[in-house]
Length: 389
Image 1 (cartoon, rainbow, N blue to C red):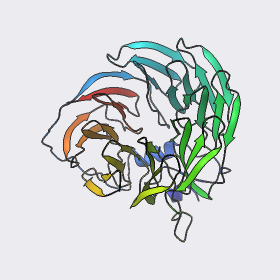
Image 2 (tube, one colour):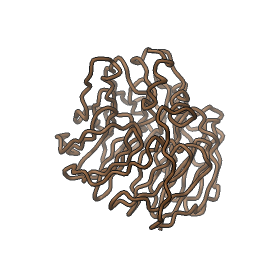
Image 3 (cartoon, one colour):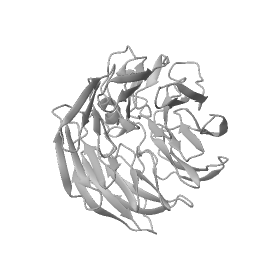
């Protein structure tokens, strides 16, 4: 299947045939999904009656993301951000003051990950780079495919996902490979910048074919595997049912959502199913003490009650605006869109509570929840800490 043939399907981030297909630039997806000429005509913004106030607490610059999607990392009182040209910037989380700059001397494609001591990023050549707070490169590790997501670290292990579907566990001190997990991929898969979630000595990740997997952090052994969605249809394209965003965890269950599939939640320790509902998403989801929130592939934000999956509300007035995955921020749910707007919704009924503009470029990565708001990074490299009151 060629790229020109795929261009009609703007809802697919990027399709690739297995892990042996020629590499296609991630930018092809972003040009379709966030650039000009979308398949879905974006809805005009409706006037709202604000019930909350959103304002920019501080803003900074990380450098353009170019063809990639970069996610800020928060560690202690610091925010770490990166751009494609290779610069990593450390900001004070409260004031936005620049605390440090790291010139990696590499073109970056995935990042940032940090525990406050180790600062991690990846390249399209499959390199994982580790730096200390002073910017000194500690090690470099070579993987088997490009790194499109932020490496994560805990308990002395760095966990990184490569573009060929493998997950690697690396020694945090040296970068030496400790384990690798891989599985057979379907003939056609969605290429994604989603990485992994680390929680309670385990690694959670979604895969092509609608599978959610929990691995042991220390060894990479499979704890459990569950089906979020099952491929169906007559053609390879119709049978794409990939999990292309991060799973979410609330302490008792892990939930994930698949393209052309479902959102489903499972017991955290056993992987037994709790509930599932039909929906299609490539952007992602969030969870709080009440609900699971999903950005669907047409631009609607949908809320499901998290214990049983009952539908709570649907906000569909962002149709075609290529919204990001949602962030649950206190009494609100926040998404960004292809024009750099940040939309604040009430978690009670999905109504618009506030809206604020950034730099006019797409918010690709999911916003990061802060204590009183969210942190967003735009495609042009703008970093915005937004308070919501």
